[in-house]
Image (cartoon, rainbow, N blue to C red; front, side, top):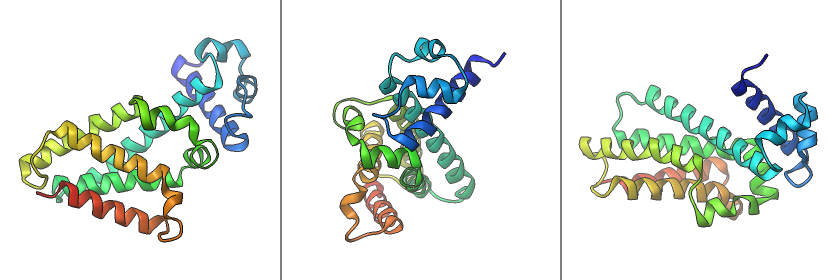
Length: 195
C-alpha cells in the first residue's frame, strides 16, 4: 500500500494534469480521482473541493521551485556575496514560475484564484519563501552586501516584487520578453538590496 505522502502526491500530480488540460473551473474532484486511479471518497476525504486541492497543488509546486532554485543559487554562487546569490535565486524563481505550465495556466486564464494570496493574506508558499529569503538577507547584512533594515521587511518586499512581476508579466509584453523581464527584475532587486 502506498504511503499517505505518496498517495497525496499522486492525487496532486493528477490534479496538475487536469488543471493544465482543462483549467480549474472545468476540473472536478471526480476527474482527479479517475486520473489518479483512486476512489472519489479518497480524494474527498483530503480536499473538500477543487479550490482547496489546487491551493495545495500550487503550494507544492511553488515550494519545489523555491527549493530547487535555492539549491542552484547556493551551488553556482559559492564565491558570491549573499546579495548576488539572493538576486540570482529570486530571478531563477521568477523564471521557473514564468515557464511553469500550471502557474502560467492559472495566471493567464484564472487569475482570480490568486487574488486572496495577492491582496489579502500570505499562503503556505509565501511562508516557505520568507523562510528562505529572510535569513539570506540577514546573511547579506553581516557580509555587508545588503543594506541595513529589518530583514523581515526586506524579505517581504523581495517576495512580493517577484510574485507581482510574475503575475503581471503580460503587462510588459509590448516592451520586454521573458528574459528581458528577468534581467530588469534582477536589476531592481539588486538596487533595492544594495547598501
